Image (tube, rainbow, N blue to C red; front, top):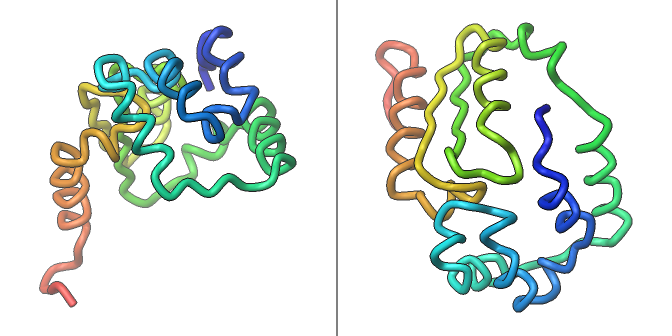
Length: 146
């Protein structure tokens, strides 16, 4: 994957954003982009509402996986219709990654929305219909809601 900028990655090394609401508020814009730039307090509240922090070792494993794993060779093997959502202001996962995935997954659709890393939460009103249309289009003929 195309990594985030080093300054963003440096803020990811610590799980502090999950533990310290003030730290998250102060760093939300540079970590998540999108509406976190104009509403860092809102993002901080969202991320800390019912937050359950896992074990520190799990966080280390997650960071290690992000640094050392790539699914790139496997993407052309995906045969299922695939919806790729990506924000145009995501400091953690640059848009170039979504474009690369789209080029390698034959039956993929790329939807770029105006927003950041937390788009499924912060842009839910825009993205839910996109996901709904994608899922509805994949139904077999004659299928109905259960």
